[in-house]
Image (cartoon, rainbow, N blue to C red):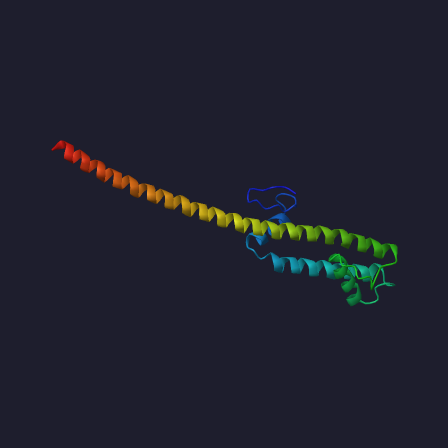
Length: 156
């Protein structure tokens, strides 16, 4: 993963369309719907591919999609399993994607929490700084008045 100026680690090739899309989604705080759509899409695609390459183990699209979703989530109930080489290859790809995707999800959510906390701390620090500056200005004005009063008395 790489660092960018916004502090978001996307892990995608800099400047790619996917990189830009992920940054927009994270910045808009609409990550959950995006992740649901991606997960559902990959599960449907994985289910479709599984039914095409392994008709023996995945007789229906629904069963294949269920298996793909369970595999993506790294749950692995074992109620439906591929036994052919092609089915296992699809399963392996889904496992790798699922683990990577869950890691990305965890990192993204953690990054969002840290970002919100950092923004809150910066806002509080800015408010303290502004308050300090305001108090300092008020004290300087009081001192200026006192000094002016002392100078006026000395001039008499």
